[in-house]
Length: 457
Image 1: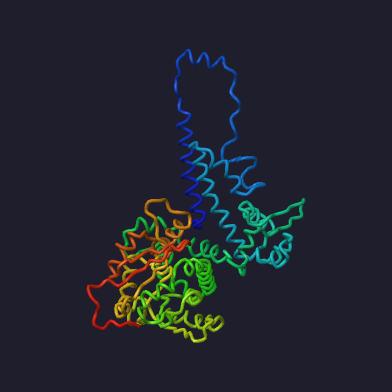
Image 2: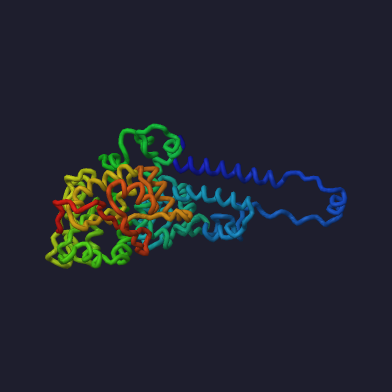
């Protein structure tokens, strides 16, 4: 079986190549003109030579030689003829190979090694610092990356010096906002399942929910990540989740008035007495950031293997208010008996990992406890798709990623309300736009009356 990325490139390349050839054949169809027109054409001067084939030469340079891909593609996007459009898709398919080269560079920490050497490094020295055995292979990987603006390869005869670029510096593992975890995740465990994407969309097997289920029939993605031989993969995945959270925190915390929100749901009680449970919150980065803009009682709720890390995180970065005590609760968000009662439950990027049915099950478990507190709220930090517009690149990538690996999905407001919230017994109160990628979906417990055991915390 072909590696996933190779299969994608091959299939896409063949399909688009066929489309391009079909359009050329159509344009070359023989049409017999009247004799007078044929005689006039014969007397006319010969036409100029045909232009270079689109896709071989774009602008002043062949793609990938002496220019970045984005610069080279500008003339391509500006021309509307069908062959050009087909070629554009071919070129996009070949970018998968660039992505694979980028993965190899990240896996072997090439950007880190170059950065540690002052930003530049000779090819031989770089080779000797890695497990790569062929200088030719390393050179070609670097050149493939260079065509996308990642690294700069300076060559003078047999002398080759590799320089970091602003884009390659983002692949350094410890760089602020590093993209290395994303590259490693997307090109390793995610890619393992991509070969089976067609299997899942044509499967009638009710036990199969993702493409991953065909790659790993005996362990779902989360179980696979928890295996001993995947410790490094799990660490990378957790780092990716933290990096994503850190990029979103300014919007989640600053794009919504949490202080006014807590005053609204807390009634006459001081906001400092309101409790917020971060459901599946990992170490609790979100709660820690929220404490900088509002006062409340933070509760980190997650599985046992995450709580120890959470305790270490809060010990290293305690709240400014010494009176704030963090509560750590071990539990399962499918089991309502393990979930504490609270004024507010925050779920960031949790439900998009799960199918509609399982998302409903998670919310029903939370509702068991939320239903006991007056004006309790569930706040979902998620993408809210616009059904009237094409998906953006990030939205489409994440949605297919959910289908590929974990069986979840991205949803529109209508889908959130109809397929998840109403079935779990919640009312969608508002969708708060934060200015970032995600919105905050405010949900209240839907009931015909206040249960007799309801309390205000």
